[in-house]
Length: 76
Image (cartoon, rainbow, N blue to C red):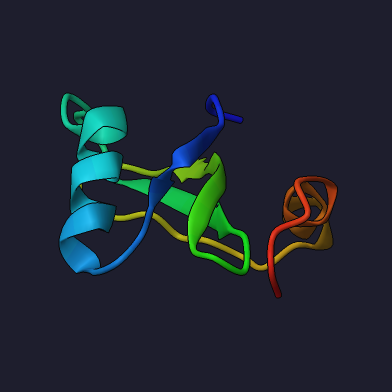
């Protein structure tokens, strides 16, 4: 789990790009991130769910990954 970003509020797709670019800009592989938000769209968690190959990231829904969102009190 990456550090909390409570002060960061998501208002549009550019906000998502700005935040995620700081986390994966220098990666040489596909990275699948899960962003957890509260009801006011403040980021309460950013989880690196999977790191794939050079051009693909196959992600399977697993209940363990959802536990992170529950423990951070993210909005469903």
